[in-house]
Amino acid sequence: MALNSSRADDGQGCSVMNGILTMAEAALELRCSKAHLSHIVNGQVADLPPLPVVRIGRRVLIRRAVLLQWLWTLEGGNGIMPSDLNSSLATHGKD
Image (tube, rainbow, N blue to C red; front, side, top):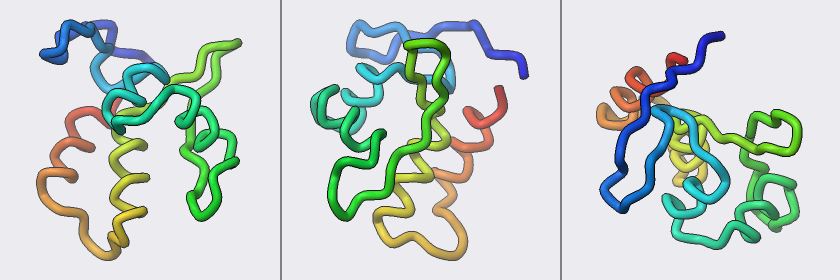
């Protein structure tokens, strides 16, 4: 599995790896604290499924495609994903 090492500016002054988010970047996208996101990842928030992550040593990384899929599932998504989500997964889901 090769990671795309190109970096892009997210418009908020943060440089993010295309398709891969750190806990801080994912927390920004979800508009929650890193501590709350950590609780979600570890399955400690009632009525929320844990968010799948990639652990590399102490680093916790989240694939953007997985985050979008997780959100879509929480919103009650079933059947075919909306085209904007589908295209985002196709663009960012291949690392």
